[in-house]
Amino acid sequence: DTAVSQTPKYLVTQMGNDKSIKCEQNLGHDTMYWYKQDSKKFLKIMFSYNNKELIINETVPNRFSPKSPDKAHLNLHINSLELGDSAVYFCASSQLAGGPFNEQFFGPGTRLTVL
Amino acid sequence: TQLLEQSPQFLSIQEGENLTVYCNSSSVFSSLQWYRQEPGEGPVLLVTVVTGGEVKKLKRLTFQFGDARKDSSLHITAAQPGDTGLYLCAGVNPDSWGKLQFGAGTQVVVTP
Image 1 (cartoon, each protein chain N blue to C red):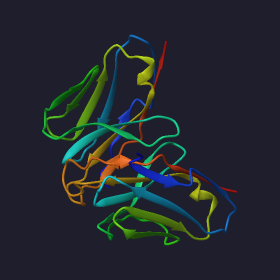
Image 2: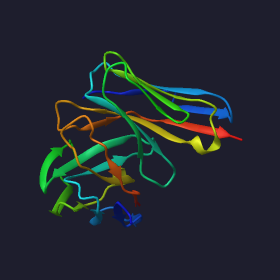
Image 3: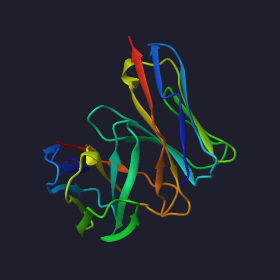
Image 4: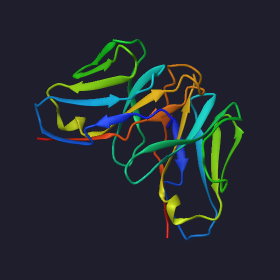
């Protein structure tokens, strides 16, 4: 039943490790996103894929690499984790990416804690 | 970068009172969206306003888009504890694939 799902829900890891977060949507949407929400609740877009093609790539360290094997999945791999990467990461999807009605459906988030 | 400023940052009121949250920018957006986020969950879309001057109502929530499409407000009448949450406005960037630019959010707490 879940529209946008993410795994894991919580991720606690040591500095320097590599980790991945997975996202899947069953809404049939063409566009998927990764957002980062910091401790002050500010939500900032990181990446967006439309039909497996990268369309938005904000100023994000290249330690972050998104991968979209198909339009229903968008994974985020993070290399050499740093303390500042601790945040909640949200996956989202939408159908109409290019227009004003860009209604986005968000997953439940992955809380990443880097020790 | 188009910046969206939300005010106030935090609002605590008693059940039955009214409240207004503001979202302001110096930039024009294609549309403006309002989301509500509850603890441990992702944001959920409440409304999208597209036309300058547009007013939309969702039960006790009234959303307004400024004439110049640079600002918006959310008014809640007779707030209830269920209205508690983080309210986020987000502007749709007309120049960048409909990219959403979020405000910093307004935390609303409604106590019984």
